[in-house]
Image 1 (tube, rainbow, N blue to C red):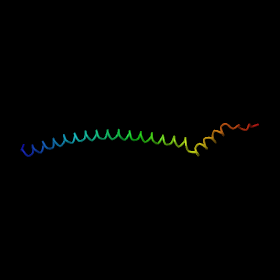
Image 2: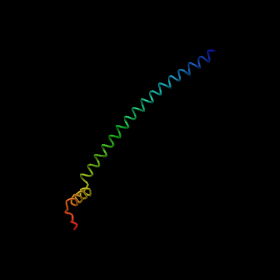
Image 3: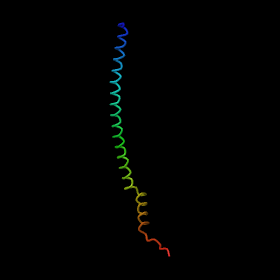
Image 4: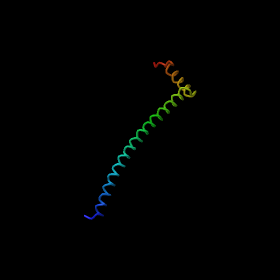
Length: 81
């Protein structure tokens, strides 16, 4: 085996080892990004839910519609003979 081929083989082995390290770092980064995305999604859902609850509490159209529905439920129904 010549020294050049031995050197090439060592370089290829070193490259494979470095690739494994990069793959591990990439997987770690992907997991961290996934966790951050999930946290962001949860925060956005919470923010949107709070916004919608506030809209339902304060919007006069929603309040009027809710009162109409309540009046319909409470109104006496005509009896069928």
